[in-house]
Image (cartoon, rainbow, N blue to C red; front, side, top):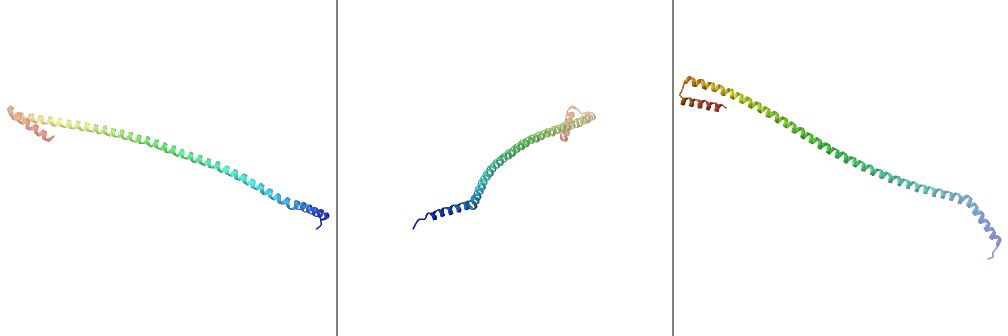
Length: 161
């Protein structure tokens, strides 16, 4: 095994030519494709990070919107409670006023009927008194008979009332 420097130089030249050809036609496009793929991966990572940040922002907005909706619903419920309490108080007040008005009307009606009854009783007592007086005069009784007759008619009036 001998060593020939011409073969060695020829191998090196062939290797350099092969390397230059591969570099120009194979490595360049291959590295270009790999660089494009690297950039795509970086862009996708950047896009994914932006999407994640956007999703986090939207999640926070949704949480805030839900919290605001809950607060608004709570406020509406509280307002409804206050309104219903006011309405209940108003209904109770109106019912009390109406019952007082009806009570006053009933008392006036009772007073009126009482006055009518008293007037009717007075007229009956007057008529009875006149009738008793006329009976007394007709009979011209003595004092004892007069007293018995008055008691008798008073009992009759008491029985009718």
